[in-house]
Image 1 (cartoon, each protein chain N blue to C red):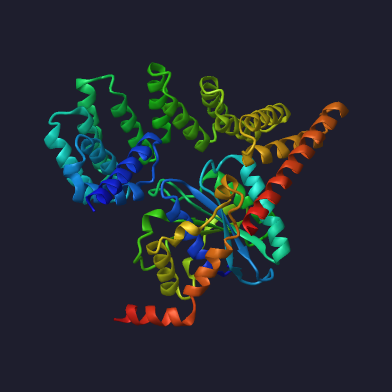
Image 2: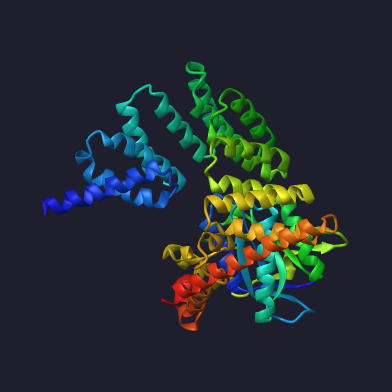
Length: 212
Length: 274
């Protein structure tokens, strides 16, 4: 069974995407800058939609544009994430399965990640995510022990900090980009903010707070 | 200094009014502005205070600020005892606390006194939606629309529910109703086109192209419509079922769309550099 590692950057942006549109279902693509083979390292994500997830045109457009960007930046699409508007139900919807199937055609250990809206509180002890992998032709639940999120507490702190400071509104998804094409769906600005917060100096401050 | 205060108050009141009129769901901002207005300047608001209490209460529910919502509700209950409108707000608070049965009872009691109360009926449908009971929500909403056939908000809500159930034919029907009554709304044209594109097949693709084009006519900056026009025209041109004339025409449309898209991005890059 394949191991999957989820980076801080990918997790934080996915989480903030869900927080930015709490009344909508949201989705996005999981990317990797590592070569194929071995464990799947999700190093980044691109938030896609917060409206009309089942409709085809914008989804296809998003997939194509992200594909092109990945080719230019030596990344691959390795998965798909979704958070449902209805927090009591975090099972993959038909459109989630469809898109994940499409991704699996190009990437054979692709992952499907559902964000569990009901567990997204600031001090939750484990990441509020459920992962699926493809076995034969069906998407089955992954064993939790094969999913790694290094430095979970720091990651959670970064997400909380960005929420508190209001910086989560910096996040741009593909839908928002289409509303205003000057906005950058690769989120360079937000990436920089996250990197800054993940710097060793900041991490030390938090760890001492957590330990108290 | 009193003058400065008046100016600030007027600004805050105007903001709240604008958000009310535009039906903006910027709840965090409403709570920010509204809470201060209520706590510090209630006496200076005159009769506006009541509609502000209502607006702030709903926004507070949206932000899980039950403390603030409760305060507003108490003021409204005191001022308007027995009011159906306030009863509905009480119901919404119960919904926010996920006490759906109690909320439903509240709305039922409103409907007993006033069977034509559309707000209460719509809240009951919202409860079904919140509970994930899509099929029932759809059924109730259809029944509602048989009686209140002009309710645009309801038609749009129904189209969204159908889209989520992948029932594109019925979603298209709802959007057709909306386009008929709102012929200048580019968003309805564009959403209709997206549904048709999703349904697939040559006939639907051609319809989708036409409606993407119509959306662009109504708003030439609708990027979704522009991309949609490009994609639908390209697919038609690439189809083995079309004759050379149709192919040529669609290649032309696709090319035009590509040029417009490139221009739009060039302009946006220029703006970013400024």
